[in-house]
Length: 137
Image (cartoon, rainbow, N blue to C red):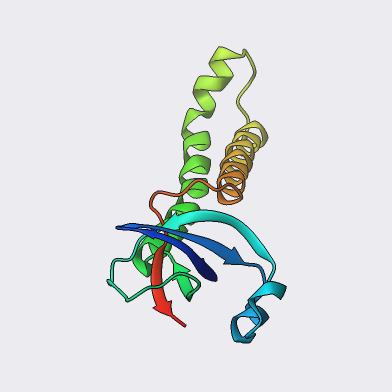
């Protein structure tokens, strides 16, 4: 996430911002025409000087983005491997003959389920930490 927002309130470390919908609004001097999203809180780790109505660039730390990207890549692969190794347990539990096709089918089911989980989580507003202010425009 690398977006722009307008500072709406500062209360110590709690900084309330409203996201700007369009990057074109950043260079505009007329703040009334900017489409604004809903408000949320950010942190100011760099202790940048802020005032209300400042336009700021916000985002998550790059290391966090890298770790989450790696997890979203490795989780479906690990799930597919789990499906491969659990195939004999499933064949005994549900009384079917384990063939290469059924084992491949379970690998596919586990992979698609894990990929769907990653997709759904990435589309929610669930975050490990608050975004931080990167730059004051």
